[in-house]
Length: 327
Figure (tube, rainbow, N blue to C red):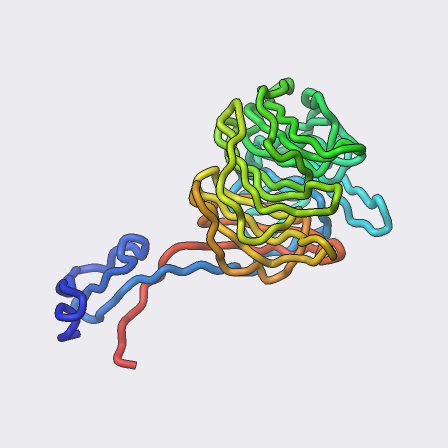
């Protein structure tokens, strides 16, 4: 360490105790015993499996890595194979909860584990259901029934956008106030389905998706400000049916399906509000899995891989301390 100041232009700090890794990232210090540093670390790790494999299910995207919600979806084939079951995650295992009133697949969800909201879905559903951590109750119907939709927000300030009506893709956006849906004056600039969403009702992110016909996936991203959509940065990999976690200016999107050929993806990308960067891949490539949590502590569960998967993966981004040695 005698050449450290010559090389880097600054001395090694003496600290009586090690700082938190996030604070010490990029620094070198001596604690009286060891020379240490902290380096950034990003990785996916296996979590506890769902009790019931499924895909096209909803999640409470504002739920966390240690308090997530998984609702309905399909376990087909054979089709439709729709289930009504619900599970909650505590950071290590999933437990079954009260069933939804109307099973469906390819819907969206938002909110938290104890205040969740699910909406849309196939077959061409306009249904909305609210969850209080124990029971499900019917909410106000959407104005446009559709599936393969994007969602964001909370139970009392929800957002739905895009999707497929059964005859056409759409860019229609609706806002939920806790009891009813109202059409937003702003529609997506690029109508699409199988779009992924995250964020809030007034600061949402819609990523990629399919602009069929033809069966074409896109990379373009759009940002919502509560009244209109504007174009954001383009993703590196065009795909559909991804999972997402985080907020408009700090999000991750993962897995999905690439067209043509319906190739499953394991790619992860992060958005900083301007541009996308590549992150570590998920372990199991899949489509129509659900996401929750934040960009630093994300969660992916279920999905078609290609059959209904029970796999859960946890993403962690942060810093870890390292002792500097001669070797």
